Amino acid sequence: MTEENQSSAVRKHNNKWRVVDIVVAAIIAVASGVIFWGWDIVCTAPLALFEAVTPGFEGLLNAFWLFAGPLAAIIVRKPGAALFAETLAAALELTMGNQWGVGGSLIVGIVQGLGAEIGLAIFAYKKWDLLSTTISGALAGVGCGLYYWLTNPAWSALRVSIYLIASAISGAVLAGAVMYLLQVAIAKTGVLDRFESGRTQELV
Image 1: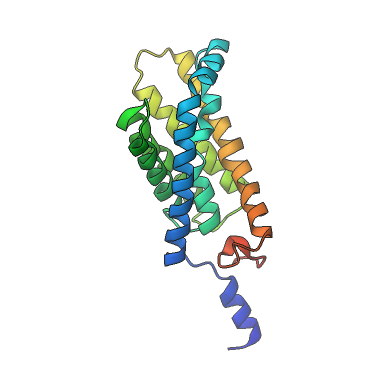
Image 2: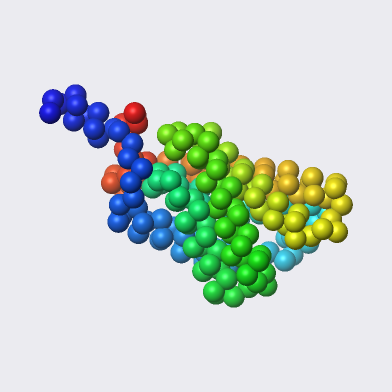
């Protein structure tokens, strides 16, 4: 194999999961689950404060439960990473105990993970940049908003609209764009050299 072909082989994206991908995605999920749980403890007052501005505005705080999927996905860059990490994080959050129960922890976590996954799938898992990660975070927020809309049928159309938009914005900014920038910062330390996200070669 020529040097040029070797370089091309290195750059070529591979969707097949490796053991290291599973381990790192799981570590991200566990760390995220602990953060989810910590946010559960302190979120009551901030949620009430934002809701007091106008019902639905509290959706701006949803990103603290949305970031596991986009972060894991942008680091390991494998199909299913967002769903895997968000679901595992939500399961851990539920296991540690909170006020939301199975629906408000695990089920909504799965829905959020699916939303994040769709945001990357629309690019056929070939685009791993600020745009795709931001869309992934935004759709995780939409998934969260849809879940709470369906489980709160008494909400007015105005509240649903505000909540969905706020949740999507929250996801796009914190769970999407900020997680992408975090991945870039981590990659600069060299700890992601075993991942495409830690290498500088352009994928083909």
